[in-house]
Image (tube, rainbow, N blue to C red):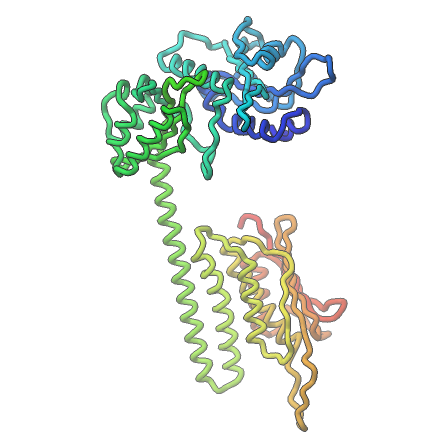
Length: 512
């Protein structure tokens, strides 16, 4: 399904500013739909030949959560013309809300048509109609409206007039998400003086959680919210935002905390025909959400601290092994201890990265680069070996990263030490030959939920009788065990056609 922007750019003459306004409207019009108990369809005129009647294209649709829909089928992408859109044409051409006409039928569903022109105020204060909202109400469940429904409908009419005036929706504040209280969460209507004229049962309950047990009607909401807030500064801020909405502006959303409860508040000005008549305040009790957020933050901090301590412990183990290696005289024992130091240090790198992140995943490229640099510094070879990475590993979960870093550490050390071994010592006068250069390339790419990794060098290659499964080297045994066990993948070592060796590792990235 094409997006609003795609449809508008392909079929209409609307400019970028017009499309941005319609996109912002579609992001905020669930409020109007719920208050109206009606489906909203956003219609824009399509390009037609001169002299032809105007056709309209539906670029967005929203159904109410407070009433049954008038449309079982999606209307987005539909182009209509002729008598079927006469009400849209009148609203578009005359720039007024159209409410005349008898009910129409969609199959077995009777519906009432209305049309609301959508105006955009340009930077030059020029106001023009850019689209029309079709407000279609399912009449099959029509009944005498309650006080709640009457207040909803009255507020909906005020917002509809603001859409026609070009003052709704308000511009979104920087960094503000689309998440906001909905009509069903709690609705409060204020008069021009800031006093509550209506509060829905859910709104009443939200303020009861904050500590106000009386009825809200008649209360000055800004003063009440300031008095209830646990933090005086937060209370003053909440009160100022309510007063700002009464002045015709749309302030950012605000959370008020009191008595262990948290209520999210959004204030919207009501100013049909440009006259401030009060404000609409939507509230949502988010106490449980914030409690879970705090619990998750505590858990994340604990996990990061655990990774930090594991990293410190591993570094301590590496330091102890390094001290032991210095006291050992046997070359083979010293080499084995030094290899253990490198293996422990590579695992510590992963935990160090995890200790700085709130996620149980790591950006792996930086870890590979550090392991590769260490491999060239400690490997026993007289050649200058350059390391290079191609492609990106991306973000990997911790359980993959820990095993993969050990595999790559072994492969890189093997590539340097066995691909470019130190030449045997010979007698005679020493002559300084030109410094040879070797290269090891680590490449990575993702394909069909698999990570493909290749470690290739231009060294001397593998012996003709080499068999990885029969090798007695501890490093290769670790590689095979981790690749096929912990990583549930495959590993293949082979000679390259142009000389040198390559190790090809395939790791599945699906659910483990």
